[in-house]
Image (tube, rainbow, N blue to C red; front, side, top):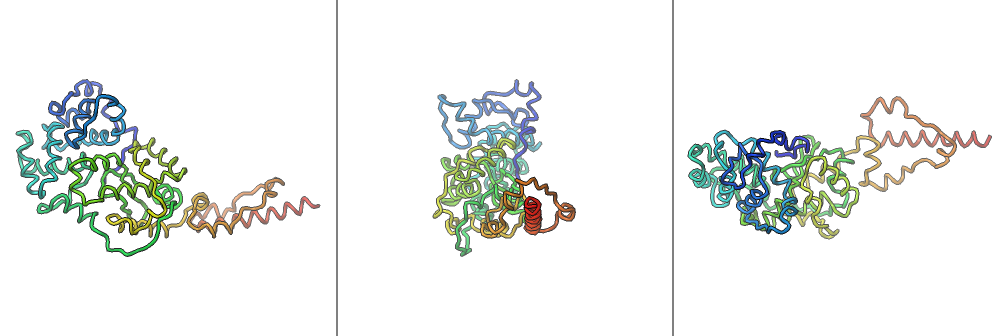
Length: 374
């Protein structure tokens, strides 16, 4: 899985000022392993060669800024170019990316091999080039791509196969990444591998969420969109609308914090709002199976402490029956501390702890009121 690196480590090569002073101004001049940093001109050329994107001079810096999360990922990936591809320039990788939509993996390897520099013109290097380009440019881990499959066949087999599940329900607004992390205790793993999106980890303890929404936009306007079934990219964007709802202020604030902390793609939080009628599970065809598994893990999870329980909106009726003690408890200066058995036994059910706490506060309130009468 390609996970988002921490912001502090994203540019560990920036310390080497000599490396940046050697940065070339065209993709054909710079060997990716030796010169991973892309100048402004190279960034524009890279987006054009790989994705056919035409950027105008006016407002270029601002436009490139919206692609920084993706471009940073590519530059970081170039630090780990396989040794068999050491002489490859950025241009070699851009040309290789265009070949991946044209046939089976075996035929793609054969087409890419003569495009590589002389030192890399062998079968093993062509194979490693496809793996590198898949992760670094397409954001797809293609290690499982079979020799007789097209890339489209591989994607359909792994994730984009039409779902046969007949579940019928609507996913509520609180079904989002923040609630997974803050209420259900399920850790969010931000990933740059599209095929890992919405995968639950072992024991349902983690959930992977693909955050590079800008790459989905690149796919939508590029010929590379042909590697996906129709409507796949749009449906993927709608799953981000579920995970990062713009109508939920708490979710927006939480994602903003995550984005700044980890250098995530900021546009992931800008996916369009889904109305109530657009949140039905049957409206999701390709991602339905994973959404169902995710929903089951979410529904069966239990808060691990009082704070998570207090945030839990999944059972409002039960929460409303557990009202806090009267305000008089605080007006008469009641001091309350948790019993030793509650602090020493964190494994107890959170709701049981909450009930005990409320009972204890109610008893102290009653005692305080008796003292006040006398």
